[in-house]
Image (tube, rainbow, N blue to C red; front, side):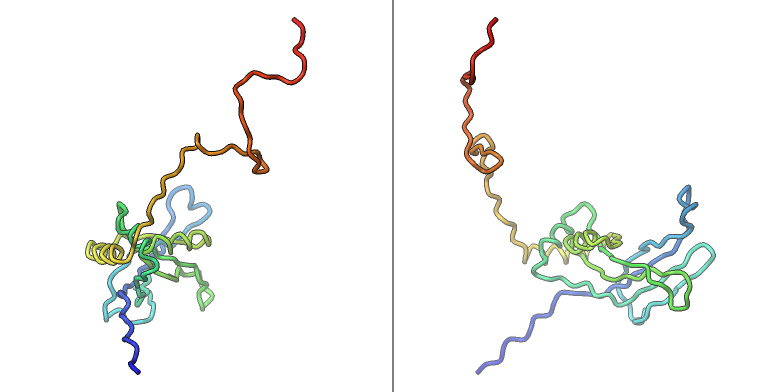
Length: 191
């Protein structure tokens, strides 16, 4: 009996996510003085370590680093990668949530997932999650596009029958006939 072939390695790489807390400008600042935004998505480096940490905290901003996020490509989501790679601005999609601080301080923005798939971003948005984008480097776009072209097979578009040739039905699905004759029921009123 032969052993099964070894599993193929999933195409993937690691990134780090930077989240920034900044003051809100303009009239909105009456209701909310601070907001969290996605600052950047960068390639993972060994010096980042594995634990999230605050890189900078001033009276004007706070910058957090969240290392070791794996961005993987899955064959069954090749269409989502193809849609991203062929868009005018290919990007990372980062879903994040505000998490209460352990010391009872203000909530902190914490990434929950990073993806290159339009479909993932759509599912997260449908679930009312916070999703932000960050443009990807050209080499990542090329890598993603090559994967998508290898695994994505577009569906053949079926020719849609013109509306004028479709049968008319009433609201119960019964066939209806339309006549252009001017037959009326009942007597005509006298002139």
